Image (cartoon, rainbow, N blue to C red; front, side, top):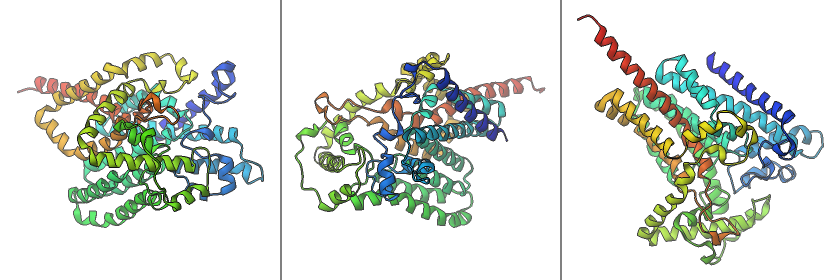
Length: 458
């Protein structure tokens, strides 16, 4: 009941706030008269054009090689009211409907944070405090108004974290397929799944069977687990079969050479397999072009060869990349794109100051110290052992964030300094916020227990 109420109240509140802001904001505070940030969903680097999708049909989602098709599948549905009436797709209508979808996702994520904090603290009050803290976080609000895949991906990857946490806490095998289903949904909404992740998923599910509190029952759960793993493999395998790459991202090649510091203009044009060019030519839309495909093919091959032939230099280059991405990672998420609504909130400056730079690192360190103090060394060590697989999957999401710097096409002379770490760190933050709330609760709870023990009669 409480999670449903949080979902309903926060989703509706965001929707009404957006309506109110559009009706009262000055002209210069809205983009194109209706957008809360500068970009329509129709002109993101990660999305296809609705006109091209309409003319090519659902096959466009298969021939999409720049990004997983999750958001475009939603946009395809959102343009059907016009298309079904023999009208051309309406970009503004699709965007406005997507804002509503993202309000719903925003509410679901707030409800998830409530469930997670409540599960840790056994307190509805603390769960409400955790959900409120996350609901008003300017970075989350900005992401819920950004019409690209991040908010959709954030919900899916947060569900993955939560179900993984529940399995590790209870060892009930029924949580594993829920974890895999969330991971599948996340992989279809953002480029979380790379070839190294696929191998770890297989190892993890085998380990989860061994760790289950009932291995015989867990053996039955392996049937849906295997099916879901196979489905997770489908999209990367499709990419490899059609385009000879395991990755799916607009500029995967530029990312690969960027984190290694290899000048993309120094890499010669190879002989491209004709079939991948033919597949790329079958459907073009915005950034989904043969030029993008060829760049990714050429630069990925060069980066992979460099890693094998120059491991020491590669390690040094990866270290240099952190000097670009980490400072960006520590900037406030809400500053990724101009959003006058978020900037006008009275708590935005305080939030941005506290959850950025050395203050953010200090908060995380303080949370860890409070948990260690409240649980003791043995209790902390037991906690680390129990949730070690959580750390593995959190790190798998963190790796592409930490090495997200790349060259920008057409501006290669500037160096590999372009990074999305300020935005991508949001995928790491739900567990961090839950940890912060839990650390405060654990400290207060342990003190109450000690005081109760001290006051107890001998």
